[in-house]
Length: 84
Image (cartoon, one colour):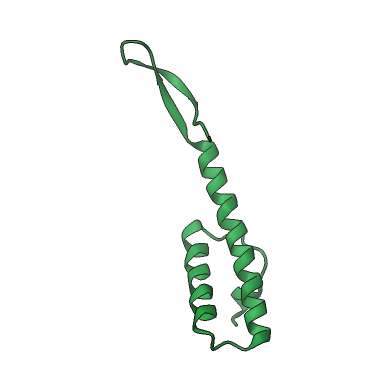
């Protein structure tokens, strides 16, 4: 496993980079050709990446707003996007 895979600081990871690494981990685990100790380590890394992706997605959702329209369909402002 590389030094980058060992670090727990994912603050500099974009969503795309984290997903790519997570997909790589899943592929390695699915192949089943990884030693048990390394499987555990990369699984834990995968959990960190998953949480990082969830955090980034939640932040993106919180920034999205929907446009409010008046009765004639004219935009009159924005409001937070419903999360339900």
